[in-house]
Image (cartoon, rainbow, N blue to C red; front, side, top):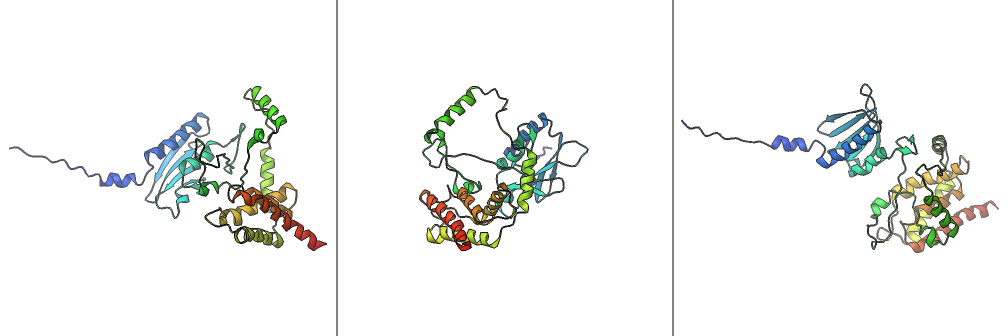
Length: 294
């Protein structure tokens, strides 16, 4: 008697499992970094943890120790910037991002010369400001993540010919040792960061910041269509710049002269014709206080 056998393949579970794991390209990015760090002797082992909320790739310096870092992908993030994160041994989020490549860059480039640096990182980039170049400019949202912005035409266009000679001489004799780089030691950076936390920003400086933002938006008529005046940058990050200015000047209290550093927030956030007027406005805020004292 002939029997007809039917093979039924149910892929429902598999498809569900796929949604609770790294995508193929995500796993490749992580494993490429893992292979590099293993070859450098920084990482020794890894582990995976999977739940309905997130999947984690843990890396270990030694097998017997707790995980050094955990690279996580959240399946239901509250906002897109929480999609990927890096946590420490205690589960504290050290960094998060909507882009896995951007997130892992801070692990991939944690070298200052031959020294390891902590997971507190500054990332810089350069991009054209117009789209006639071979590569595209950064869009305003991504550009806003770079707090300090400088519009530089380079030393050639600046006709700084002595500096041009120095650069050519430097790279003509470069042997790869990078002995010519004058480094600021990690201790100096750590001390400066510690001092930053204790800097006081008095009310008059806070009011000066409010006055400057008001001037940008109301007097110069800046809005979402012609500028990027984000709360993140101008209400939060700006305070760190003001404190840093005080630290560099060996002070534990900011004053109105520190508001001048706000000019470094402006180059690609406001129209070019506003820049000079903005510097004059910042100077007037300081001079106004001097006149009051007199």
